[in-house]
Image 1 (cartoon, helix red, strand yellow):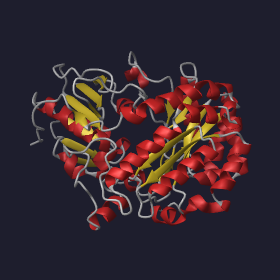
Image 2 (image 1 turned 30 degrees about the horizontal axis):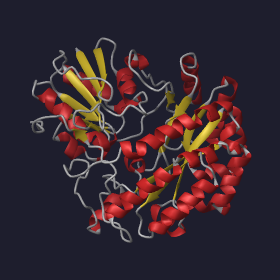
Image 3 (image 1 turned 180 degrees about the vertical axis):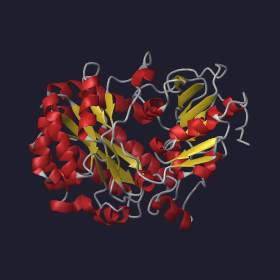
Image 4 (image 1 turned 180 degrees about the horizontal axis):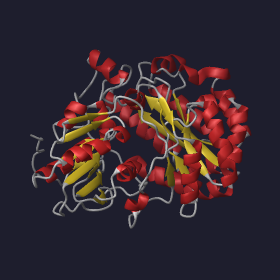
Length: 451
C-alpha cells in the first residue's frame, strides 16, 4: 500500500512562488507518518516548497487541514479525485467543521489521530473506509513516534519543533484551540520529551516548544524545566502571562535555556480582556509587574495583541504601539480579531449578524488581512489599515535599532545576533502577506466534491 501525506500551503499568488520566510517542519505530517505501519510506503510533499506529483501512483492521500489552508486543501483533493484516488482529512479545521470537510474528503478524522489512525488504515485496506472517525477522548501521549525522516531533502528553518503537550485550560473566546480540546490540556511524559531532544540535539541547535501554552499546568511545567537544565539547549515557547508572577518558574526558565516567550497580552483594555475571557492577564498587579519580573530574569518577549473588540478605536493602536515601544519587545504582533469557526466568538458574531462572510476561509472575495466581520467603533477597512500601520511602525529601522540595543535583547549573544535578521523578516512581511490569497490562484476548474 502507498500513502501520500500532504501539507497544504495557505495559497499562492498568480504566477508567483510561495512565501519562503517562515517555513518550519510541519509536525502533524510526522505524527501521521509515525503512526503508520512500517509495511506502508509513505511519500510526503510540502505544498509550500515543492510541486505535488499528482500522477505518482498512490492508494490513499492524507491531508491535515487548518482553517487558513482549507481552500487549498480542497483544491489538492479535487486534483486527486479526478484521478479516482481517495483522500482523508484531519487537523484542526476538520474538528471544527467536519461536515464542510466531509464534502471534499472520502473520510474525515475528527480529534486526535492517535485514537483513530490505525483503525482508519485497517478499514481502508479491507475496503470498508468510514466517512467519519472520531476521537471522543484525549489519548495518551506516551511513547509518541514522530517520523521526521519524511523531512529529508526539504528546506526548513533549522529549528527543532517539540510537542510537550496539547491544549490549554483557559477559555479565551476567540481561541480555536480551546474549542477543539474543550479547554483541556494533555501533557507528554517528561522522559519522552527529554529522549526526543537528545536525539535531535546533534542536528538542531535551537528548539521551539509548539504547545499553545507550555505553562498551562505550572507544576508539570516546572518538572519539565528541571529536566531540561542538564541538556544545555536554547529554546523558546508560548506561555500565558501568569507564569511571569512565579519567580521560581522564571528562574527555572533561564537555567533551562529559555531564550524567549510568546505571550498573548491581547489588549490593554480591562473590559476587553474580560470579554475575551482573559481577565487573568491583569492578575498580580497587571502588565507592569509581570514585565518587570520578566526583565529582571532577562527573558525576551514576543508580545501579541488583538484588535477589533467593541471598545477598540484608532487610539487603541496608538496606546498599544507606545506600550510595545516602551517595553522594547523583541517582537510584537498587531493582529485583527479573526472569528474562527467553532469558537464562541464566531457564534457570537453570527448571532449579532456581524459576520461579513458565512465562511470567510472559502469566500472568493476574502484574502489575508481582510477583516471578516463588522467592528463597532471602526470600519473593517480602518481596522485592517491600522493593524498594518502599527506593524510598519514597530518594524521600522529606527524602532529596530532602539529595541535591539535594549538590555534584554542584547544580553544574549545568540538572540542579539538574530534580532535584526528576524525583525527584518517581519518587516518584509508587513506588505508581503497583505491580501495574500487563500487557495492557489493558478489553480483551474471547480472543486470536486466527494461522492
